[in-house]
Length: 259
Image (cartoon, rainbow, N blue to C red; front, top):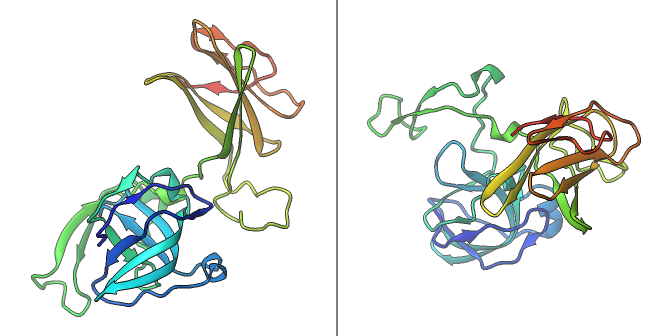
């Protein structure tokens, strides 16, 4: 259980914010080197106890404060793609679990996603019929199988237009630094994009990509009616798309729109 709050932090770089204080039921926590962190050491999750709201992170420094109580700092946040579901802050009292090989993932077939499952859980040293066991139902949506969100989102104003670029991440096989590009670990390359003005969402679309580099460019044409065009940084044309409110302003873009 956490005894202090943990604000959201960027993934991919060390979180140098204030220490997170946690109290364990049992077990010691140890400081490790940054090399060990990159090798997967000190992997933990923090969450609210539901089936969906969890963040995986690692920590390099653990300072003992009291019996079974530690301050954790120098953290790598949002591991395994969980940066996409991390809230603005994990409050005091959040659940903290050390992923040391003891907790095992529940194996479910893909057909079981979204289907209510029934569980009884309790101390492994006691029989299932013991009064200490509790009953719970959950339907898992497979968040860990979702493609990672893009990174290095950039916007540049050119006249009355805004050019947006980003780089995709790989959910599988993306740790190899010897290749020019990360592999496409999904069956298709598609992006759900949304543009908003203040709190009112004005344009969103699904962009299917078949080939080309990982960097994609998007242009939002400002004006009375929201319009948008998107294209690869690649001369090959795609299939013409149409946009709600006005036709696609550029034949260079081919895709599908969703409002």
